[in-house]
Image 1 (cartoon, rainbow, N blue to C red):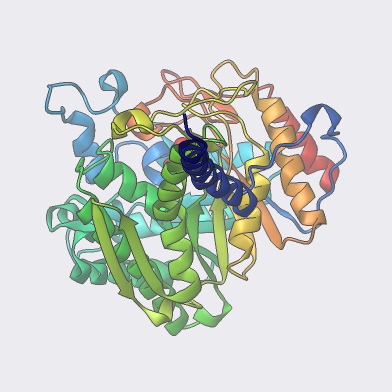
Image 2: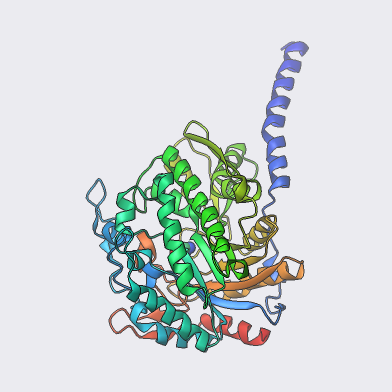
Length: 470
Ligand code: IFM
């Protein structure tokens, strides 16, 4: 071969190598995947401020039982295109943990743990069973729950929307239509006025991106659609609902005294292979849609949802900037993406070598907690960890999980991040949506026949950490 041809081949090869590896290096620098040498970490060397708000979290549909008037209840009896049940093994939420009737007993469990706060959601379909018709008994129920919490020295944190919609709202298109946001705002006003004397901490919407991805992109949750363009619209509208709910509360009596925030699930979207440009491109794309769109909207008021060839929606609401007194952070883990032209394959979670798997399809990844705190801190408001926990039916990883994840939070605190509280997900084993009762996130197990609650061994680490920090 002539030297000239060799030179050309060399130049092409060099170009290809540069075009492949240089972006990989840039991505690694801009989004480093933190990895601690866990064998050198002393998870007992942690420290928390005296006024740190230790808590537990639940949501209405997952624990209350017989929420028969929402879209999830219908979904639980539905089948997919192939005739398979929508929920694993055809399970139904049913009586769940009967928390509607047993909340006093459950507040006793919170006392036993030593927590100072309880995050729970109010069930819209109970409070407004028909459009514009409010049930005073349901409202009274939540007033009683708050009274009982306060009497026991436990601070209530209320979530207004945690995945469930009343059937009437779902039927009229839920958040697919921007004009329907007004329904949520009317509900917000009623709940706020009923509970404002008792509740100071408000979460508007729980995990908007999860609601959208599961319901409108992957179709695992109701309404089971797989429509990226609609997903872009629904995310825009549900974020708009947050903004309007924020200003609605602020405009009502006592609103200026309230802390109102949005709850963001920060799943780290990482490449499976750091040297693979395809993995990076895929991970960045998902990160952009799942995390970036929401964070950017809250930061700048600009809505930018881009999935090349699938969906693109740009919008703006300058009022979104500033519509936040705190950010609620739900953190569990990361997903490692492997590039594939077949989207279903690329979405399959991959575990990195040596990772400890939880019962969910992801690993335990405490370093990602620190990364998530760092990322949401850029919003410039205090952080409440509104959810964090492990699905661990054998209860043989929970203690380590709690130790390592609370080490990450303690490290973030000592590095100056403004974290006000931490809510373990979840108080007791409950209905984990499309996975039914198979995923055991609870600090307490629940006997589904007798409803007996039993503290798990792993929960004792949480109890100990709370006790030591007081
Ligand atoms: O159970 C869910 C909760 O409803 C929302 N955040 C994640 C939890 C565990 O998957």
